Length: 405
Ligand SMILES: Nc1nc2c(ncn2[C@@H]2O[C@H](COP(=O)(O)OP(=O)(O)O)[C@@H](O)[C@H]2O)c(=O)[nH]1
Ligand SMILES: [Mg+2]
Image 1 (spheres, rainbow, N blue to C red):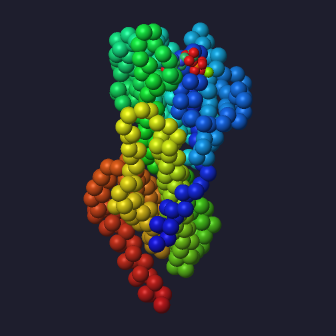
Image 2: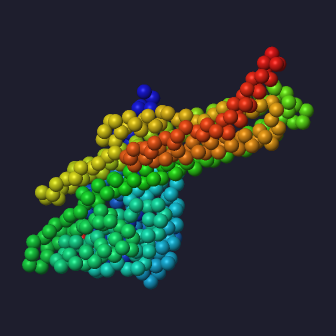
Image 3: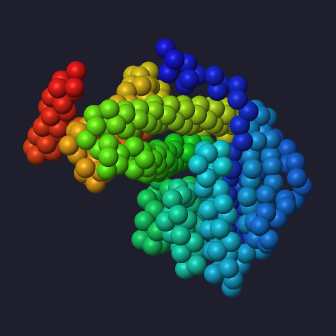
């Protein structure tokens, strides 16, 4: 099966991932990254500024061959919060391209439980990132310290109220092995949960972004088709030939053929885009789960299972089913009696039907990707007027053809 083959073959792919880590100086960004990617070799020293000041990029390569493009924010302080906000959002926008490889796959906002506070500019920053379509994971560092329980509670409450972040979005970590005064070292913790979140966030952003991307491309395709078809009508039909069957038929054939090609092109596009995203996600999830199970162990803590929406073959089957069954509405109908503007009206109505079809199709893809049952297909197209008018046209067209033959 061709579609199934298209979904395989990414296992040995070398992949890179883009991670944005934000937070005030001293909250523990560097420490958390070191904890997250053990044995990672930092290739570009202290990092290079990406866009002017503010954001620095370094590349890590982990033991299992995952290249981590880390975008770290330095020297961005509260007294320059407006500037900070702009720099970060510009960077996010720069990455928000059509290809999954360019996105920020993980956005980490670091806060320190030691400071016991979340500032207003920080909640604003988180909200701005979320509004720009990012899944933000709040990492609360220094959770190993004594007496931070109430600070953690207080900070979580602020994040919940001001940013709508459920507890699941807040990861409590200790990135260092410190010996506390007169007590045991609680060691490091929080990594496994953070990794699990990163994997499910990537899936979430695929489920969210891909349908929107496909919809945009589909709409563009339909509107191009309509423009082209109007030109075809203008070129093919004039005052002298508009009642000629062969002229009308030739115009109609051209338009329908183009619509058919659009449908084919679009379904290829959907298939490629989805299989590419799936492939990328699979390798990503695998590499991250290797990182957790291979590279690092935190005592007796139980390893969480990294969940994949495609663990079950049947889910994948469904997916392939969606990919394989793109039925684009084609076959526009004109009759020889139609005037040019009537043809264009008919074209517009058909374009509208194509857009409606696209809308439903994207909703279905979106539901499949987010693991829901797709909504029921809307009831069959209204059998009313439009269909009756069309039927009449077909009838008169075929009568005219008969008369000619
Ligand atoms: N106890 C404890 N100390 C931490 C933790 N994370 C970072 N630190 C310490 O906090 C200081 C600042 O950390 P660093 O990673 O350099 O912060 P950055 O400026 O955000 O990159 C260092 O002394 C770290 O050892 C943590 O989770 N627990
Ligand atoms: Mg640092």
